[in-house]
Image 1 (tube, helix red, strand yellow):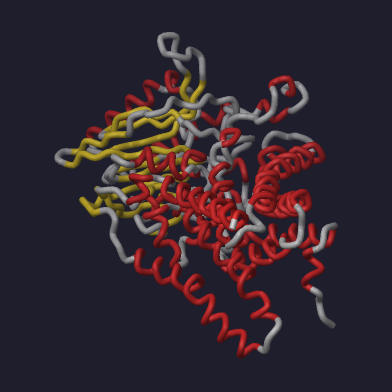
Image 2: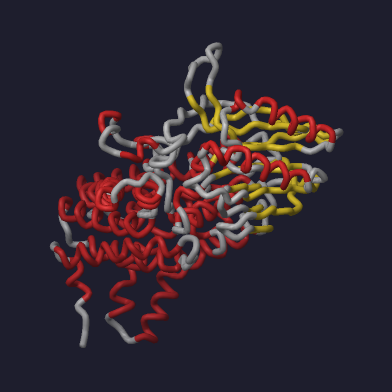
Amino acid sequence: MTIDLHSIQRPGLLGHFFALVCGALIPFSFEPYNIWPVQIIAIAFFYFSLKPLNSKQAMWRGWWFGLGVFASGVSWVYVSIHVYSKTPAPLAVLLTLIFVMGLAWFFALMTLSYQHFFSQKSKPYLSFAAIWVLFEWSRSWILAGFPWLFLGDAHIDSSLKGFAPVLGVYSIGFIVVLMSAFIIDTQWKTLFDQDRKTSVKNLAKHAGPILILPWIMGAVLSVFEWTEKQHDINVVAIQGNIPQERKWLSEEIYPTLEKYRSASEQNWDADIILWPETAITVLHHQAKEYMKFLDEEGKDNQTALITGIPYQQSQTEPMPGRFHNSIVGLGESSGLYHKQKLVPFGEYMPFPDSWRPLLSFFNIPMSQFAAGENSQSLIQVNKGDSNYMIAPFICYDVVYPDFVADQSQDSGLMITISNDAWFGLSNGPLQHLGIVKMRALENGRYVLRSTNTGVTALIDNRGQEVARLSQMEFGVLKAQAQVRSGNTPFNIWGSWPILLLSALCLVLLSINAIRARHS
């Protein structure tokens, strides 16, 4: 029995279903599976399926591919909507479906643009990679952004990771898509229409440089140390494991505060103690006495204690009454940071307020935060002769590559706190950890991460785990981190080089096509 692969290139449901399957395979390249080669295969076959289609057909083929990506990769938002907000299951399914169907339009518009403007020009594989990067980037800022499942985030353990500190996560995606499309454009018949021995020889001869050179370059770049170690510090991250359904109950306030205080009492010999997002479950101004005690204990023991806490602006502040998801530094640390990137379905609801009476999940505790201002100060640690800055990030903050690069330029260490209990034991928290690893690698800094239910971890400047706690357990992570100085190229330039390179490729290919027509 033989399969006619060209059947998947035809318009209609068979080709769309095949694209859906290709898209659904993409999330298996990320945590917790880490099967990154699946990206190259899935994208290659998806690209192959676009070949004979017109623009409208390609748009719908791309939409089905995107539906597969997001239905397979981010449908864990259902847990937040249904389990913790008590929204009826049918309505929660519908809202989750609306969410992933909306995200799928990024791929629909990407394939529409590619097929209409570039598919008939020279080197279509190059334009496909370039336009993929530009649409991936657009997903980080359109409608506040959803920078999740970027291809490059899956390559923390492949040799392509060497590009991350230089050109960032988008550059790895560019290389992956370029290789996948190049195989189809130049080697499809070589691979399938000749005997295997000849296929391998021709593949090595014609495709070798573009398929092998990036891996070699990435391995060489991985050798470089882009930042320098200043000194070691002892760090502690506490994972409280407070059940999400009980976290905001009034009777849980004292037991929660006592749990974190007691765990810290045994670790005052650390340089930094980090508590999770909203570890203190009362407002900043309501916890003054408690925080004063912690501040004095930290100073007495020469320890920086940093915690998440909800904050309400006073009448003398710019936005009176507005709530923020915040970080405060106590003891040997000082500073207050308000989260800037809010997570949909967790801290704000991406639907009109007029829907509020209809949807019970609008009443999730602490689900109506306001974003903090740009250009906030870093957390400062002053301990004897050891003075350094910490770049703070709360949960969703850390998934934005350029935002993190900009915020961390003057820091010696990065911290991120989270409460991924909203998403239970789904893949969401594990994918989140994988993104944190890429941010550590891009910026050449250690990242200390404290979460309520997991995954609490310390990541080194190469994006590798130093220590980690199991999910859904109370635990105290103790490890040695490094304060580092200097900046990676990505730290300085952000994603602009790879974005400009992608745009330049499209411009040059268009100019070349115009010249070819005239000649």
